[in-house]
Image 1: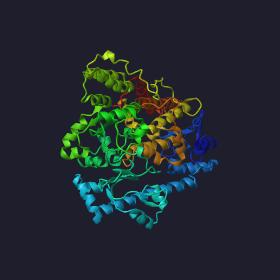
Image 2 (image 1 turned 90 degrees about the horizontal axis):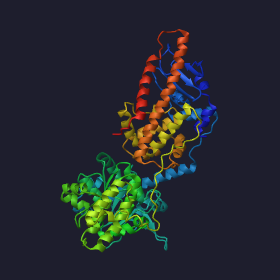
Image 3 (image 1 turned 90 degrees about the vertical axis):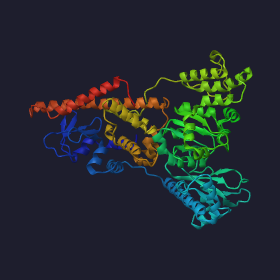
Image 4 (image 1 turned 60 degrees about the vertical axis):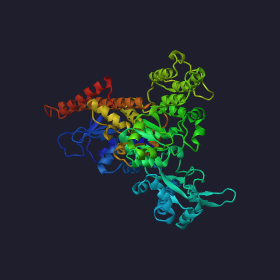
Amino acid sequence: MSTTDEIKARIDIVDLVSETVKLRRTGKNYTGFCPFHANSRTPAFVIFPDSGTWRCFGQCNEGGDIFRFVMKKEGWDFPEALRYLADKAGVTLETHTPEKQAEDEQFARLRGLLEESVTFFRHHLLQTPAGKAPFEYLQKRGLTLPTVEAFGLGYAPDSWDAALSYFTGKGYTQKELLEVGLATENVESGRVYDRFRHRLTFPIRDMAGRMCGFGARILRPDDQPKFLNSPQTPLFDKGRLLYGLDQARKPIRALDQVVIVEGYLDVIALHQGGFPNAVSPMGTALTEDQVRLLKRFTRRMVLALDADAAGAKATLRGLEITRQALDHSDEMVFDARGLMHAEARLEADVRVTTLPDGMDPDEVVLRDPEEWARIVANAQPVVIHVMETLAVGRNLDDAKVKSEIAAQVLPLIEDVPNSIERDTYRQRLARLLKVDENALVGAGAPAVRPGRRPPRISRPQQKPKTPDLGQGPAQLARQLEYHSLRLLLREPEMLYKLDRCLQAAGLGRLGVTDYDHSEYQALARVILESLDQEEMEPAQYVLDHLPEAVQELAQLMLKPMSEGEPTSERLAEDLALTIIRLRLSRVNDTFNQLRYLQEEIQQQNVVTRGPYDETYLQYAQLRDRLDRALVQPLHFE
């Protein structure tokens, strides 16, 4: 039993409300004058003991549970109401442990250290004699001073201890400098020294703009490696970060497309050139975590590779080497199979384009922005890119060459989940190789390599499993509330589609009042707030702003579904139907309550026309719309 459920079990809603509202028993329910608005004629305030909820059928048109009642009565937020009712019920609330609080404070201190490092490196780039040459290099690459400042670029001095001495002098310890990756330690001698020396520095932030680490580029041609990143730290996980996403996320969402390039300077030059939807995986193969992150903003992804990275040799290597090996590569390698799998699992549209020989994206956009736009517009699906790349410079009249190309491409085609796309790609390959398409059908199926996963078998959609809440209308409504939030927590942005679907059916947008239980209202409120702000990605905003009292509930909802995680298409449909069923359940329950109230008033012969007649008519019209929405096709656009 959750904390909120335990409190509800100990506090009778009738007793709680009776402390301030005079109630009168009506059948199995209780009525009274609403305490939240002036009304002395019609007892429009109803308590439903079975469900532990209340509702005003008058001016307020609101309702909820004991938490919502106290919140509205006292003007408190949910945590305040929780503390009050927990004390009243004799329930002890769990708080953050001192260890967790200390960890949070330490992370905040480490991020502060990284922010100070941005200022330190920027000072050495723009305000010291040693930074003149690095700044001139940036200018030669076409970057302007405003761009340099906007991205926080800097210069790490040509010294073994410049950063170490500066920050230890400010009270930071060597251990903290090691923790954030600003310093490194020689294992044999135990000597600690600066990690970044005589390099350009690029601050790396998460999508919310919080500092995580640095990337650094050489200035001397003989230094190695060419690019050096912060090591894996509690704040820096290279496989889960994308350079430039903090500045690109709004343009990505607005343009409904992201362009993925290899280098830091590529990202910066594209932003400066008017293409602010560019990000970089910082030189390594694109990971599924990064694709999943981008999917929150768009499903349309273009991987822009230079001619070398997308060449036949690299392509073949990318098809054969495991993802683990690719993720540790120092240079971007085209991992066709990894991209195919990520595209299929995450329902993304991943395309690939190549650049002119010997040119990087920053060089292309500086030469001709329109040329860059054309290159991106001509991006091709991964399968087509692979088959055309493998065919370049080959004798396609040679049977062995045809067989070799087919052997490489057909397994990729078999990985495509959509049958129409598979047929289209086979037809394209047959035309390229000038062979009968029938010769390719099934040719890729037997080639199951050791360790390759068997094809995924779709299963009939099952009913969602929710906590055992018993039976009856109130329990059904709570199950529907729970399931809808379980879906929304996975993809808060799905609320946009839901609202369009509801409006197309003549129904109102989703709101906090769709939920009767205060812990569910608290979750819904944070989800709605996450879409009204633009400082953070919605899913991260929700996790960061959940009231402590509902964090355990949210974690329970986010556990993997036993019936399997839904695709975005199924999630949208499931969410819409769940909300419609929830509202219909409420309307039907309200009809019964109104009928009982009307019958009581008619028995008393107080008025000839019941005060609930107008409300009854409104709910009848709403019920008709909900009934139609359940049987008609859903429209999300």
